[in-house]
Image 1 (cartoon, helix red, strand yellow):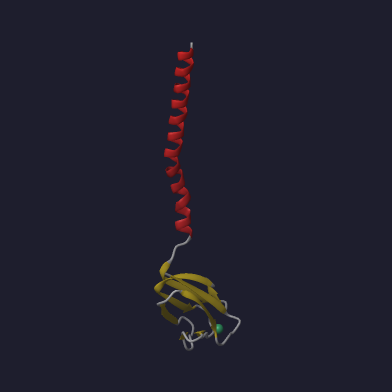
Image 2: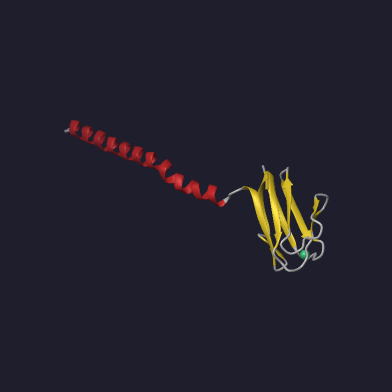
Length: 127
Ligand SMILES: [Cu+2]
């Protein structure tokens, strides 16, 4: 009688162990889809295109990889001039003119339009 109980106990515990094993084995597989959106939601480009439209920068804030280049294109009918303190000055950008700047180092760089000071944008450069 005692032997039967012992056998049953070992069978039960073996079953529990197996189910625990299969559960932990399936965990890495289920955590992979969870990890993928994180990688997708933070795409870091080394080439960025920013559109100047209706006196605003689209996108207004953009993330760039260090060493990457940003190109602004003026899609407005009015002239804009992009400036960032001690960093760049696009000079006057007429309609359809483009200006590119390469950001070698990580950091947060604010820029604006010297003609329309309320036009502001930000480039976040990461390693
Ligand atoms: Cu402007």
